Every structure is written in C-alpha cells, then in structure tokens.
Image (tube, rainbow, N blue to C red; front, side, top):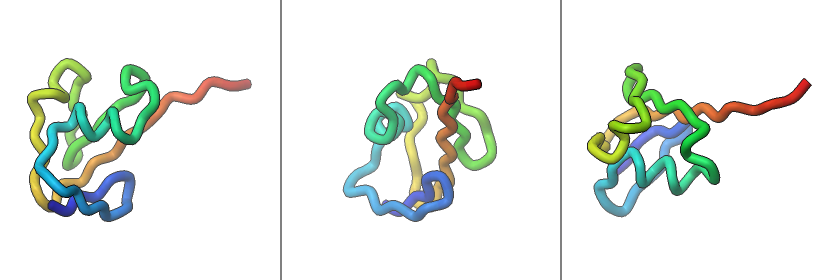
Amino acid sequence: MNIIINGTSRQLSSAKNLSEIVGTFCKQPKHVITELNGNIVPPDQRAQTNLQDGDALEIVTFVGGG
C-alpha cells in the first residue's frame, strides 16, 4: 500500500490504522494533529480509521518555544 505522509510517498507493507502510523512516526502521539485526505481525525478516532492505498496524511506536531 502506498500513502503520502507529509508530502512524501511511503510504501507500507500491510494495511494499518491511523493510530499505528502516528505511533510509528511520532514519539508523543498525544501531541499531534492528524489530517487524512483533507479532514481532521480526532485522536479518539485514529484506531478506527483504516488507511487506503493513495491516502494523503498530514501529521502536525506542536512545538513550544519563544
């Protein structure tokens, strides 16, 4: 399965849900916002959100600073 994560094409070996993908790419998955195909996916819906070939995912991390 091929999906686009933050503008980069990625090949996944098996179908995964959004929660697994976020956990793979983020050290603190609670502190990110996910957008799948232009729609925000709330954290409580990530485990039930399955990815499909060709999906576009944006993962945005909050960064503190001054």
